[in-house]
Image (cartoon, rainbow, N blue to C red; front, side):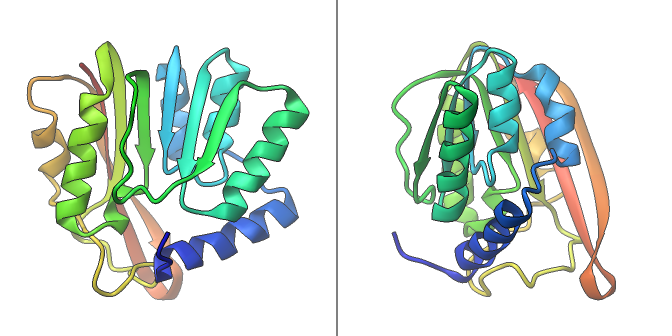
Length: 197
């Protein structure tokens, strides 16, 4: 897997979180947890906090991320708790999914790809949601000014209307925007769509 600034940035963050045992769900994970059921794909799982909580609720979870540190920590935590989680290091820019899922989650990942790759990954994720299943996607949108975590040439800030438009024909269960303060007076602006196929 080719490394890049974004992967290195988050791998360091995840090492720090593991050392500090900082395993709280973020606000997006807390919001989505009640929607998850059955076979769950956590695509870009980071530390795997959502995967752990979903497994504790009886879900069978596949968790994928490009961070070796995060996946190693997740595997250790899952084994200690006896949870049904398949966790693997994967370059998700060109990863081919091989099964369908009842719930597909991608929180805070697609914007780290160039736009063509992000849109292709989103189409693949949508195609792997079982009929009646749930897709959850959270991305940074235009208006975000905190870009320190991105590769300069390889990221995609989504148009504010993009996510809902890309779920045309699905039942939109939730669609919202949230802003968060970032270092140096900058802003992170997110769009989330939760949709049923």
